[in-house]
Length: 594
Image (cartoon, rainbow, N blue to C red):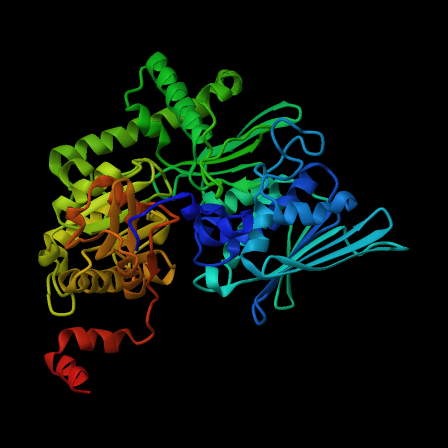
């Protein structure tokens, strides 16, 4: 590597090259190509939102790794070579916030989606039927190879078809997260008029989605016995805001909120969810004060179940993955004042139901206060974080990081998003071998893990009560760290096997080396990357443990979706053999000798 630096060293990437070199920036998680399907699906759903498409189909061929999204909306315009432009030029489209002529409400806003699909696919085909014309545009490795526009007579089979075959260079695996697509189609079928048809075809097996709004809410959030479902609606055409909520008697005490914005499920919550929780707290706190009921404002969130549906002209998301709404709170002030008025009207007409809820919240507070006096005898219930090392998160769909030691735990707390990331530091050397220790639940580290997860232990473990979407083990990138990760994984596999079976337990890869140059920090995940960096003469630093990283470096290595490496742990069908290996010295010796 030369020390000289001149204008000749400057390189200008085109749109496709930039996406290929920075795939995570454009599609979020590159574990599988589900986001590519979602980008095409967003465009089809926008046609449905605009009232033009009546049928949307997603086709998934897992044998050939070929996927397509079809709709019968208006079809992409064929003039001026438009299909090629929107497939190869970033920031091209008809959905920008300063030009709402084609779409008033839309999920796609940035003009990125189709270009990302094209850039990250071996083959990408756009097929359009519009105005008695049939256009076909075929790209290979993001290069246009063929395009034809011919006259067409009769009824077209559809208007737009986006078909592609992801390039394995950019994804860890090519089988998409089908459950995520099912959820998208379920949400769309529940929130759009009933005359629309949504179809999922997986290897010629057809699924049709047709749910009402309340059916979707009940299936997603509610167990059996509930109070009245409240419905709060406001519409200021073309925007709308709907809320369904209730308090569940039988399920988890932890609130569960699902929401969507312009048909996009917003898993990370955001301003709208926080505004709704403030409304519930303030409303019931005000009623409790007037009627002399005693409880904490947050007690009114116990057992809360809610479904928030927004159609917004100008939604603002935290990134291209669109998992969190970041509009200003003031954007919703008038809406939630209207909801407050609706709740006041309900409480005036239904005082008996209001009293029933207030008594429930007061009874909950009395139970909590009594437990503080006598102690919590049930160690499978979630305990107060005041008496544990757990630094919790505020999101109801967060991630629990179990880390080795207070040092790395403290650094991770400084770098985390407190809304999304919970941190539980444990003494790694104090985690026992669960296969040989008899009284495992008496171990302090295991006890804290059980309390933090809050859903009991097998065979009485209830995954519905698990607050976090992911349980993530993060240890140092050395043999001791690997040993601790193995011990913790065995604890999870035996005490909470359902977490692994549900695909919610991960091992976080931690880098042993990284490029560290002034403001540049790039983790090196394997020997190939390390050797390349050495040949380039980069400044490489070795990290013995997570505690040696500063908060910004730890954030890049463990927390940020585009840069972190999470390895999902799968559940073995030979758990008895694994237990034997962990508990028998002879078995370990035999394995080494072989």
